[in-house]
Amino acid sequence: MFKKILIPMDGSEQSLKALKIAVNLQESFDCELIILTVFRHHSLLETSMSMVRSEEPEIMDDILRKHASEVAESGKALALDMGAKRVRAFVKNGHPSRTIVSFSKDKDIDLIILGSRGHGDLEGFLLGSVSHKVTSLAKCPVMVV
Image (cartoon, rainbow, N blue to C red):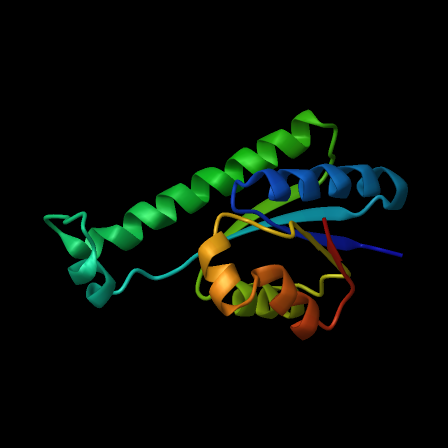
């Protein structure tokens, strides 16, 4: 039924719950697990308005990319520790919900499992959560935990 399951991870407790469910489903469906961590481009305008000033503002994207890579690789290692067999991890730059949906189309994902709330609680409260947007835009089934 499911050949590829996508787990968007931001390192939050809810994304870890989604990963655990995906690993359990993999046992039943013998599918591939794909972890995706999305980081948002940090514009120079945001940098100029930030209270924390970097000496080299263009390096902020490198810092965000490095953190996203650590989250993705940590998720992959955790999935393998839980008994997952086939796991790949990806890092993408972009708006989280749009990037998740676009990635799921490009990779022919059969199911997306994601947490109901991640680290973006304030933005989610003001603009609508990533999980809400993904459920309304994705062409495949979405499980929100």
